[in-house]
Image (cartoon, rainbow, N blue to C red; front, side, top):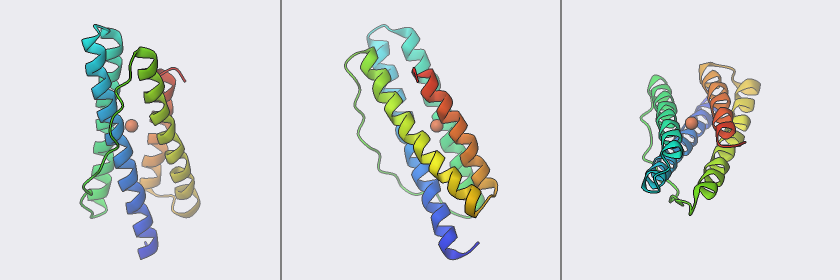
Length: 138
Ligand SMILES: [Fe+2]
């Protein structure tokens, strides 16, 4: 792998990790809020999504380590908790779609320039995030 390709891959992995950790924190925060509102169903849905995002972060971290890199320190966007269940779903959905777009572009880049196991991971995560967007109402 050339140095330029290498830094591109590391950059994509770092951005993916940042998006996943942001999603995890957002879902977790909104799950807490839904719990305070006694909306257990929404709280459970968001807790499960948060766990899945952490699973994705774990896969990305593992891939970085396999390639010989330590994961970067991250700065995450502040969480907007949301004022009611509808706003919670809308905010969470928006972040999922942002993540879907990122994975779409990244998976495309891998298919075109470097169809390897990191590319396969991005294609898998794209499917996962599309599923999340659907679970949050499309
Ligand atoms: Fe995720």
